[in-house]
Length: 309
Image (tube, rainbow, N blue to C red; front, side, top):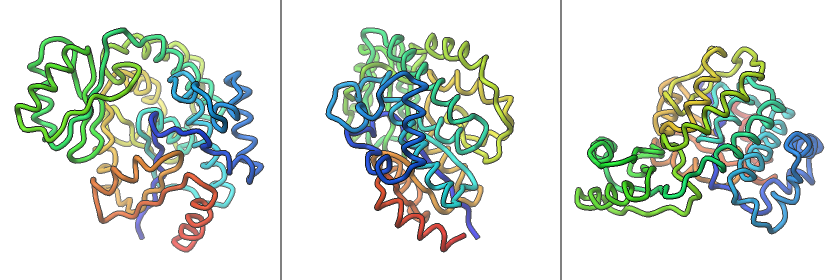
């Protein structure tokens, strides 16, 4: 029998109204989102459920996303559904950490609130990101290395979709070189900074100071880290990896491949949007992908997953 992994999306999948039906339907979800509001000092109901500008600002987006992901996770656990493995894209790795039982939900909320603030503050002027479509990773890596200034790969999302990050001029030069090398398209992204580049090293260092006070538990459910794309099974590794993750490439495709090689054949995307579901279909069409972002999705998924247990 195959294994099931819970996977959690990152920043960019947020939308107004996310999690509202869970909040109104399940007491456990209400408790989780209220707890995240209390810990962060923010009114997350307003940020998640009502039209506002904050939902797309990094320091608010990250905690809002995690609150919704954790709420859905707790609703699944309440129905007796737990994963064999977990993973998440960038911010989503904290959802995986909660699923792993290595970090409490409360600590994850406190850490991610700070992470969002540090990443927002660290955003230097003159940073940029672009999505590169239809080009081999090795070609992109080579061109980034050969381009003057700071430019590197931010995300290995799936075959044919990689994101580059760094100084605006360097990203532009690399983009031109990539087009000349045969890239199908290079699309500048509307982001507030050069995330997952070494320009955010300082934000990671500040996060390290916050993590010093966090007490971790043993890892009950192995989860993949974006930094190495390998499973984290030892709690001693976690803090250094979370610090590095802020300025390192997100190896999502490789994380998914690690889980598939371990026998995972069902991936349950928990949280707003269908970004990871889309990536998974390009990574491996033979795996089953279930998306949960509404209560209707949840009820269907529970029925399906309980039959497989």
